[in-house]
View 1 (cartoon, rainbow, N blue to C red):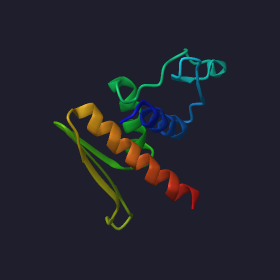
View 2 (cartoon, rainbow, N blue to C red; view 1 turned 45 degrees about the vertical axis):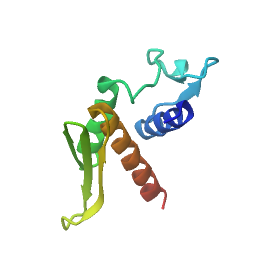
View 3 (tube, helix red, strand yellow; view 1 turned 135 degrees about the horizontal axis):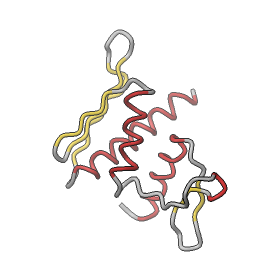
Length: 116
């Protein structure tokens, strides 16, 4: 992935998490300083600490199943009748990349569904 694609994907996750962002003069996506949050680079694609906060929200608030195993991640959202509404499995060259890519796919799907 290009840096621009990574930036765009991380921005999508920030929006999903309700974090206002900006791109600084060096081209890095950061959380806006006026939020009162610690100035921080947005790097969901590299940080388990940050990415797991997103996974936790997906699982708890949106009642969605996330399974991470070796270099794969699977996210499944079921209807009330146990029919899969969303099902995606991503395999990558490492665990965090697979999880991050799968989360981006889910967030994109979720955002389209909510905006309808």
